[in-house]
Image (cartoon, rainbow, N blue to C red; front, side, top):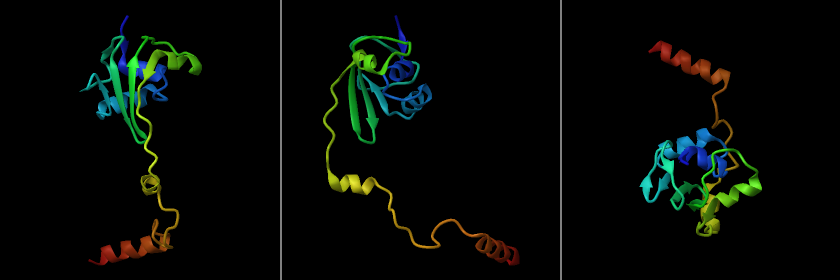
Length: 124
């Protein structure tokens, strides 16, 4: 039995949808046996999958090939998770957050501002 990589990643609930899994493969965020993998690659039992995420890298070893949706509790039986523990650096976590406070008027121009900009470009 052979299973496509993007399909297996979805069934194993590494990604929520198959299109997300496919996009991650296309962007080079998924490696199988230390090689960049395309979404159509066939998996075999024992393959090592490395998925780069914002929280860190996940290392999964394929235990079972399955291509049909299954319960979330059973999905973890498809692989052995050898991911390193996440680094709990509080500074890095704060730097990832978007700033909450923004200066007034720094956002999208108002209708009045837009009209002024259009008038200025027409005069030139």
